[in-house]
Length: 394
Ligand SMILES: Cc1ncc(COP(=O)(O)O)c(C=O)c1O
Image (cartoon, rainbow, N blue to C red):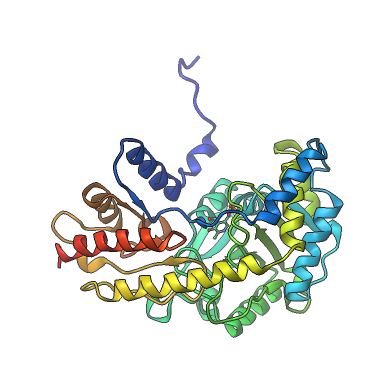
């Protein structure tokens, strides 16, 4: 009998989210009274809009505090389907929709439901950290599709084609992208869609940042003809409605996939929080002006951040076309004890108390991710410090 109980082998397939790790370290320093500027958090600094909060308060007053169906109430699922239809002209029915505890949970459920050990999953680089881990956890094999930094990290159908083998089961597309802010070209997406359809490859469309676009209109792969057989959508209310803590996401896809996820969810979590469900209905059906207001603010901050980064010697930044992250190439500052993005981030935090996420976490080691979902004042303070840090290494 071993004296120490071993963890299940599958836990060794994943590592703790690096973005969460940086945030935890920044939090630790803050508790030690260090004046930290935190650019690591991928979450809106705006409060949840009042109408959404009021819907939750109302839910409490109505004692809407009990179990609901595992997949969410009919009212909520209808609101999700209608919302997607209004934005993209899709036609999902209640059986093709399930509410989850955030977009992350939606993606986890989808990979668990669709990936078998040995299946290959194409993931464009740079990628959101979680994609890699959830595929690994399902026993899948990640196949990384390179993008060209000079072209703003957009994905080419020809690259996807080169990554495809007889074992390819899925491709994960996240446009606008975290961390690069890239918005994939519509014509390339259509080519990828056709290729996947011909070869029976799932497309997991992560639409987390769908509404935060600076130069284009929201587009869903699910709106293409006959997309239902190929495309599964992972949606999230977290960023769009500044609801990160509420935990509400959803899956739209074929009824059989949704039924599979429903089985999994029925044993893992049961329904999403009942109060959050009521708030989510208000978010989806209520006034949408807060979304435009937030986008307006992000646009101003984006201009400011890009302007400041452009003045830093050697730093090169592609213009993010969506989401709220800048992803500068800082490799010219890799000297004097810094030779990669992790060391850059660690030294910046130690010397200047600025927290950001090293590109290593996203699959490119020359970059760091700066979230500008934070106030202008914090951006000014943090960028002043980064400027000094870089100038000292110029
Ligand atoms: C690309 C991407 N997808 C999905 C999510 C999921 O967010 P949530 O689980 O809060 O809905 C995030 C959050 O950071 C993200 O960046």
